[in-house]
Image (cartoon, rainbow, N blue to C red; front, side, top):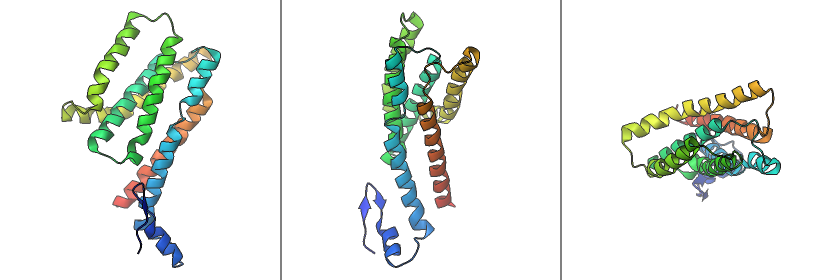
Length: 204
């Protein structure tokens, strides 16, 4: 069987089976699907926050947006990316976090800009993140603490939704919240779920 690899994906197995008129076996097909889906999620993640960023810039307003929700997302992406880098995972498994983190930083900065004047508490939060984030991303923290932070990321992402939901409920409006960004986040989560299920099938 001829090896045909690209970006860590082995197409030789699947193409070899198809050329012989056979459907690729599970052990051959599932890893390929997982890789392809992983890279598709990474590619899609490059524009997830863009609709929200553009909507704020277009209207020059952050009306109806919960600053805390976006700050928590930023923390969650930082922890997730740091953990993946520390574990040496392939780019297809963590690339989305890199692009989402960059967009989240831009988004929080824009929200701060249109939330003038900024209080001392906001400045302190920003400075604290800038001081701590590089250390976490470099993996220069206690391994036990690192594992605890990673385990908490799902709770962080869940809690990030609550302030925005509550704000929408109170104001009876979504304000400048972008539906397209919300939808792309949802689609990405479904893709991640599928990727995790495929990985579980490979194990069992």
